[in-house]
Image 1: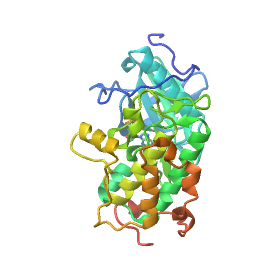
Image 2: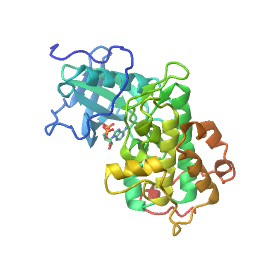
Image 3: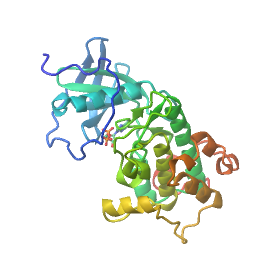
Image 4: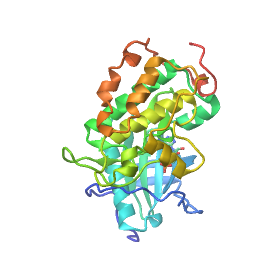
Length: 320
Ligand code: ADP
């Protein structure tokens, strides 16, 4: 006992630099089958693997009543620097304070000697990456429906003074009943006072806003999420990200030059193009706020879809 430092206790959120990618240890140590929070007396039974990320592995988990969750497990041994530990503490603190129907629910968090466990709402239908792989692209009513859910989530995140900084299809989860849930606050940052700017270069190449890459002196703020929303919406409608090319350097050049277009063979509405163009403006101060976007006729003028059938994971839903 006491081999590793306690991580769950409160500490102030810190700046969060880009995480080293692909650094998952080849052998992720096997967490126990029964996860016990000794302080609170909770017990969870661990199930099969759901997925793997930078530092974490996600498993299914069940509480004593048989309710299903996802548990994100971080091996303490993989957190070798104080920076890495601070980043995890910040992720937990930020995710913990967010509660919204379109944000992955953060239920509980505890640790033992070797692991930190985050008990999360289970998203059984994976992410929009898998959905788009099957569907290639989504129809406009679906995009309108899901962008509305995403905007609602991002509005809440921004209201709480948090920038997500990694909005992308892989962080947009789908529940059993096909609701969108924004997750993964591993790169999120708190803005503690008006006008505060963040300077850390982070994000995912295809989704990264130009000021993160090129205005490193001035820094960036909430507008980086607005840019990424533009990339998400474009990708959902067109089937590939707007600045996609073979290598990362070329992607960054396209982002710098704001070089993207709407392929003429894919029919999308004028108002969808209008929103994407507004979101993907190079000058961050020209981008609309989440509230502004939600008032666009694209959302106010379309019939509201109540729910999307599970079949939409693989084929165009027939309500259309
Ligand atoms: P990353 O490190 O890639 O940002 P995470 O460590 O948060 O991602 O999660 C790794 C993988 O686990 C995800 O890609 C996803 O497949 C799965 N996963 C994460 N959270 C959940 C969840 N709440 N429900 C279902 N699967 C999840």
